[in-house]
Length: 132
Image (cartoon, rainbow, N blue to C red; front, side, top):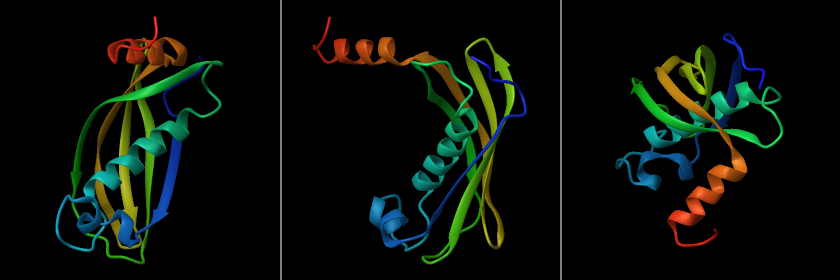
């Protein structure tokens, strides 16, 4: 593991019908859905870690404290940026911000935890009654 404070990541997408509040069930209007903004923020954090984790190591989201402050209509580009602000053992904290061409649409804090992928998946399968 070679994660260090200051790592940055970015993710972007276009607002299309499929990622609107009306389509995903988080509202009735054809604007970028909050759950999709959350996913974009998480993806930016994952991208910040790309190339900095050991083979077989990954991360999982553990918490989010965000606000969604502005609506983005279909047809606009949206992007999220994440910056690693704290490392406490395997616990990571990111500052996350989402934007459209009009400016900031959301921001907050995202926690992730470093995991051994195989152990994590085995534990999940065991919970479902599968695996050892």
